[in-house]
Picture (cartoon, rainbow, N blue to C red):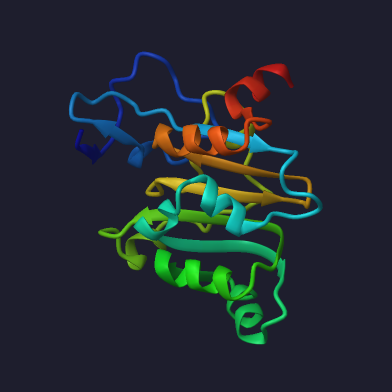
Length: 193
């Protein structure tokens, strides 16, 4: 099914205030809102996020996207990687991100990794505020929302305690849950907390 970006002025219910990306949310051809799906993984990454495990769980779909990495706290041994990720933002292809993690599956404490379809240029991505791993509550409220209005998937290592994966592609979330069945559906988690 093909999707278009647009404005949903015709929604019957008001949007929650945490959805600052209202004007660019995905809609299908009929103009319906596409709700993202998510998981919270609190058991499979002891002390920090192993990005190679995340990539395995989504069947290496990271290669299908370009990635904006922001708000990053991580500890690679490789000084070039450290310098790259210590900038205000980092823009990598999925293949570059995969190669970096293959070279060194370093410790991710905190970060916001937003995946964009390859047809979306960096200039368009940067026309919106940079995402933050710490200052966005839309992951923890229902309905879930992606933080960046143009992203298709977001991976958030959180304070060495858990990892969030939020995507408009339900298959990626289902794949993650199949690989790590002790994860929780993020919407269900939000309902309980």
